[in-house]
Amino acid sequence: MDNYKDLIKQLTKEDFESGKVNLHIHTTYSDGKAEFKDIVKQAKNGNYKAFAITDHNTVQGHIDNPESGAITGIEFDVWYKYIFLHLLAYGIDVHNENLAKFYAKDKRGTEADIIRFFSKRNIEELIDAIHAAGGIAVLAHPCCCWALSMDDFVRDMVNIGLDGIEVYYPYPRWRKYIKFSNPSQIESIADKYGLIKTGGTDCHEEKL
Image (cartoon, rainbow, N blue to C red; front, side):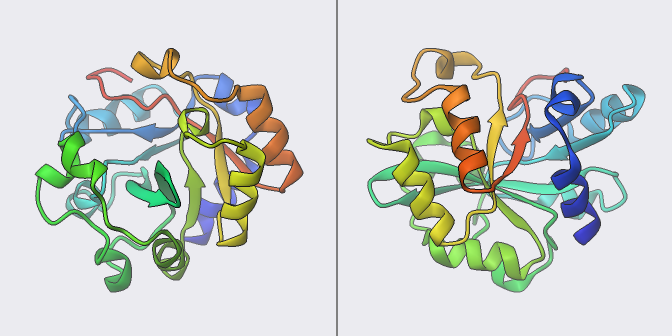
């Protein structure tokens, strides 16, 4: 999936702010309200430059819709040290057997917060599997991570293979009020460690 990875690496802040790029979208395959095909239709009708569907712990939407034009993606629930976080993977081969070991076993694992919170995924093994499946690993909505030092936290994640960080993110819903760092700090950290900068709205609604 190198073409997807190259596309993501080339996206700029202006692209994300244009409203024509969204790399963080959920559908009814996890806890979103929109059907996968409806999101695809909206993105195409809106002349999106790039969009990724990143359902929680499942790629079934991509498997069922292989010609959608969406960047293959998924959002994993995982712990790193004392921090519960969401790890996005982009450009993956959704049929990769090693990565498939980390997918949710049932619907509850894609939409029930309490079950997802007790994830037992090993983050180092997960990142290795993402890379083996041709993808990149990106830290989602980092301002919500409970890190005592965001710089140290990101540095440690880079050391285990992190490729990117979600810099351009609106912090909707409860995330607007519960933040442990600020977006400008995140952008500086991304620059410091040479990380790919991504963004998206974390859309769970019927309309993009």
